Length: 180
Image 1 (cartoon, one colour):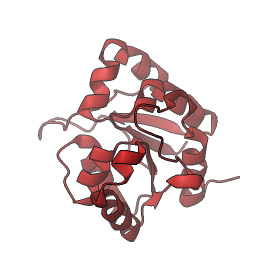
Image 2 (image 1 turned 135 degrees about the vertical axis):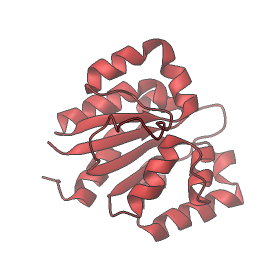
Image 3 (image 1 turned 90 degrees about the vertical axis):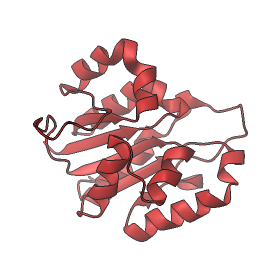
Image 4 (image 1 turned 30 degrees about the vertical axis):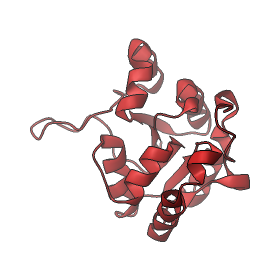
């Protein structure tokens, strides 16, 4: 079974990341879940559910140098939902979290990486966002924003429960060569 790293940032749909995990598993992936520190705080009281669901430890921090890797090697990565903050840090090459470090290295090591952003229209209007999206695309990241993924919503009106997990998974399957 191929291994998918599902990397979730602190954006509304992360509260439903278990749905993304189940969808990926239904598509035949062995899912390893990596959360940004903010996303991990959202799931802290229920992290056991996610570990039980994936069969792997849920990671949110870098391991110490003498600690073994706990997760199998990724065949593909899906960053979903990708917050505006994480997008801009990733685009600038800042890997101060495990989540960003994994994708920053992964895309430059030949691992297929798909990003499914989720932020509001006011955040989308920031000039750094367009630069970050272009920088990630130039590295080979498949970014699904707008009609192909998640269209930015008006501030204070996100619909986290309607996140297009399946669009992200379809793009991962296509990029990784596992699409039906």
